[in-house]
Amino acid sequence: MLIKKYKNLLSTLFLFIILSVYLIPLINSVPTDSWKVQVGDSWTLELKIFTESGVFKVGDKVRTTVSKINNTETTTLGQGDCVFVIQEYFNITTGTWKKYNESLLAIYNTTNTIIEGYHTYVIDWTIACVNLTAFEKFLNSSPIALTYFSREIFTYTYWDGNLDGTGAISGDLKYELVIDPIKYVVMSFKKYEWNGTSWVCIRHWQLVEYNWTEIPGFEIFYILIGIIGLISIIIILQKRANNFR
Image 1 (tube, rainbow, N blue to C red):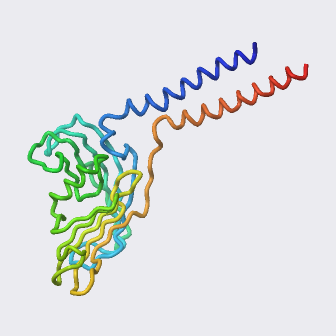
Image 2: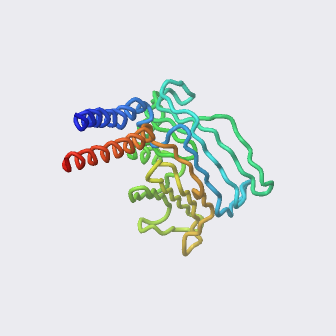
Image 3: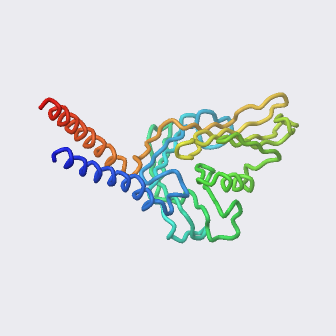
């Protein structure tokens, strides 16, 4: 009777696990199914190379934290699956962080019919939607889209010059974006300039820190695994005790 009692309990727990693993993500799937990031996710890019004119300096950082994801808020870009963030800028000269107000980082499947790329728009090309074809089409219509384009899974490259990947004249540009395969944020952004014989990197932002939130339901999942393991041991010990009777 004791074994039967635990078997019924195990069956109930297994059913609960299935519900927690499958139903919880479904509840949170709209509109987060358009993006890999979740509310609370945070990542930091650091400027590793910068030889252009401008206010940025090597060592400057930008930290981005996802504050809201929804598809109900109407923005200047229309209504769609939006990612809102809080961004902070670290000035290497002063050694201080400056925090900015919440802003729209990206929108997918927007009602704004003027926007190309499957109605996708990303501020500063910092994040990719789950639909990488839509992201690629967005990039192809953005200012970084140059004469030639190539893609190797999560690496997007645009350049002016020749089809073989070289530049034609001094000053030709090349951009390279590398997408993080877990959260689809841009983990590396490089801008090159052709000097007549080779490409020289003149700007490079690199992912240096990140803090990804747990997947919904996983905490419950781990707790239940521990409970099931304990009950399984009890059942085995009970069986052995009965065998020795």
